[in-house]
Amino acid sequence: MATPHDRIFHRTFADEAHAAALFRLALPPELVEAIDWETLRKHSNQITDAKLKKHFPDHVYSARLKDHDLTLLFVPEHKSGRDSRYVLQELGYVLAVLQNWAEQNSAWKGLPPVIPLLFHHGDKPWRTPTSLLHLFDRAGLAAVRKKDPGLAAIIESVSVSMPSSVVDVAPIDEAWLRGVALPDVMKLVLLCMRVVRFQDDAEGAATLDRWRDLIVAVHNAPLGQGKLEGLDSYLLKITNLGVGPLREVVQRATGTGDELMSTAERLRNEGVAEGEVRGRIATLLRQLQRRFGELPKSIEKRVQAAKVAELEIWTDRVLDAKTLDDVFAAD
Image (cartoon, rainbow, N blue to C red; front, side, top):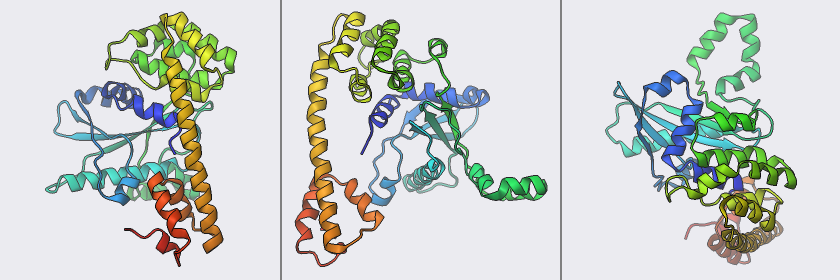
């Protein structure tokens, strides 16, 4: 189930201008200069293969070089904290992207380079591996390198590395955020994701007040040129400010805050709906365990990721099904 961080990240970087700003922060300056940013395009994820879709990232971008006939693919991902399995997750995304590209380009003779990018917005700097080579080192390659550098170099030359470019905003402070060249709405998102969410209620309200000019700039931006729906929802979910204090902050900045009331009501309704889904999932898992014993992890994950319609079908089948396969059989 998507987290508030997932939703705000995916909503923000679905915009090509915001994605370009993130990529410019992450990539080496020479590569940034070589890319024709006017060609940056977001690919629609119309995936029909169920297995491929399961491992496909939310956003894939492409851009061409200025002076060379080469297209690059970009796969951005975010983490709100350290995740030791990030590299394996990103590897799955890269393989899925290339497989989909090959299927969409039947006459292909080569594959476009894929550049993974990690946006980390936890409270502590990212210290976990960002490439397969880092994982190989942890498994013993680093020790080989110390004892026999030549042999280690040969192993590195014939193995896959797949490094990620990382934007780690854990060390940032408000002074950095003031000076960095980013669109206003991205600055506000970064402020909320990296600063406000780690503060108590009073500190969070004070921080938003200090950035009143930024709230005004985002609020006054023409539709489609900076406005970001969903930031109010994000703040209400990740902080304990509540509607009243948050509304006061917005009113002091923009003169209005009435829209927060409708947002709060929608979130209350969503909370009820999510609670109902979680209840259905728990009930189905309990019924399956009582009927068939300990469940495979794959079945648990499938149930937890299911839609309401699927849960209803499987729940109806539990009483009469003779095996787990009967419960989850395709219609």
